[in-house]
Image (cartoon, rainbow, N blue to C red):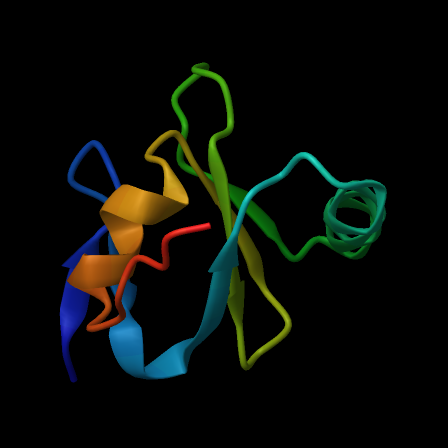
Length: 82
C-alpha cells in the first residue's frame, strides 16, 4: 500500500485512486454534490479553495487544495501539457 500526501498531512491510498481532476466543470460539481448527499465526500482542504477532486474506486470523492498538476506526480502520473 502506497500512501500519498494530498495536503495538510492527509494521506490517501494511491492504489485506490482512479483519477484526479479539476473541480471547475459542471459534471464534476454534480458528482461532488451527489457524493456529499450520500456521505462519500471527504474534504481535506481545511477551509481553502478546492483545486482538485480525487475519485476512488470505492466511490469516495476527496477534495484537496493542491492543484491536479501537483498531485499527479505523487500518484505516479504525468502532467500533460495542453
